[in-house]
Length: 182
Image (cartoon, rainbow, N blue to C red):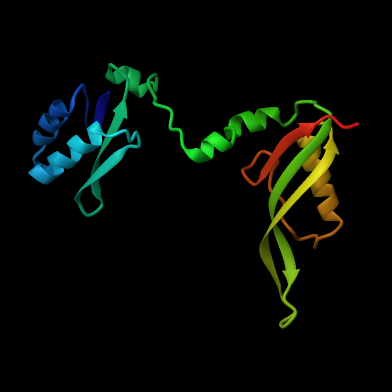
């Protein structure tokens, strides 16, 4: 695992933690000390792949990123990006593949989940406010886009016309194909 380090316009791609410490020691403003060195060594040895930033002074940081890139050019062209996998992404598909599946024709039952801003009247004052509203439904549809259209059409006739519905391509709409209808 290599390390990419950047402090303003000074940057380096190093092959081990000793080279990283040497690079940081060459920048006097950073003020390298034993505590920071130990923390950098712990980060380099850990299984964490998130970038780490270190505070130099208020609002001034340097950053360290773990990478499998062998050269600075590979790193800059993102040829060796390490995929970040967590429990949330294990359960959900990436958003880009969901958007790509929206128009895919697949008649059957769909589970649609829509989070939208619903206009409601406050009884005590008679004024209106937006409330986050979560709506889940199982419906017959021909595609993810058709599922979205059916949900919005259903809700438009039942909520205040000022309610706001998100885009089908946004993070506030999710769908799942459940199977063919009979």
